[in-house]
Amino acid sequence: MKRQEHVAEVEEVAIRIRVESLKEGRYLGTSPDVPGLVAEGRSVAETIEIAQGLARKIVESCREHGDPLPAVFLKDRKKTREFLVPVPMP
Image (tube, rainbow, N blue to C red; front, side, top):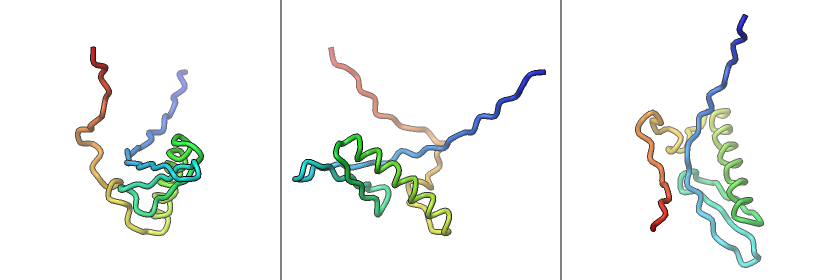
């Protein structure tokens, strides 16, 4: 008898994160797509990681409290998706 595996489908939404350098050598991240998202880290990578976690918590909080989600999370994601792909120039 073959065992059936169930794979949970994870829904993702791409958001923009703007990262700027602070005078103290740290970085500040905000998002035009997620109002109220402010992340600070010791590196760009850490700042983006913190911002991702905060965005997830903002969505969870909105759902939990019945608040409206930021517009970027309401778009129909079944439409054509667009990607930025780097192409090396010879």
